[in-house]
Amino acid sequence: MKMTSTYLGEIEVDESKIIKFPSGIPGFSESRQFVLLELPDNPIFHILQSADDANLAFIITDPYYLYQDYSFELEASTLEFLNIKDRNDIAVYTIVTVNKPFEKSTINLKAPIVIHMKENIAKQVVLQKEDYSSRAPISQPLHEKEEN
Image 1 (cartoon, rainbow, N blue to C red):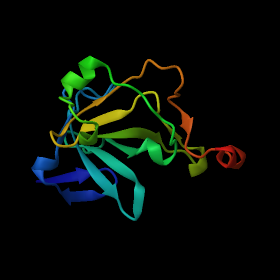
Image 2 (cartoon, rainbow, N blue to C red; image 1 turned 135 degrees about the vertical axis):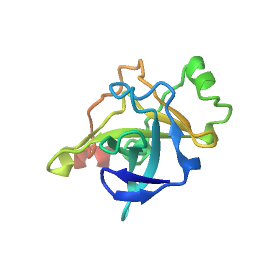
Image 3 (tube, rainbow, N blue to C red; image 1 turned 120 degrees about the horizontal axis):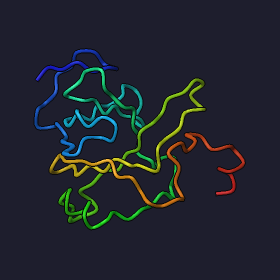
Image 4 (cartoon, rainbow, N blue to C red; image 1 turned 90 degrees about the vertical axis):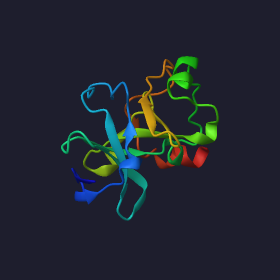
């Protein structure tokens, strides 16, 4: 199917790749179907493009590229909702808020997006842990990286 992407213009998408968000994404509940697109020449960032609204797209990333110690437990209701039986069936992403300069950009560790990759169903989960910020720095100061 043809669709328009905010970042890539008109593209062809395999309908079997559409990811359903039965609950929508908080603040964007009218859009319930998205596609995960590669960001050209950038393996770390992706585009989560709404299939319902060409103007709605998020830059997302695998948080483990930036925060290797990031961890959380999903509640039983979320495991059931997404039909998760095996950790290897899911992918975890976080939404990036892009700022200028790019080093000032942040990621939302407080509300990761969990996708059951085999079933193409997803949910943005708001964690109850106080450890994580919705505006975690995308780049940690050099001295912090050296200590870890």
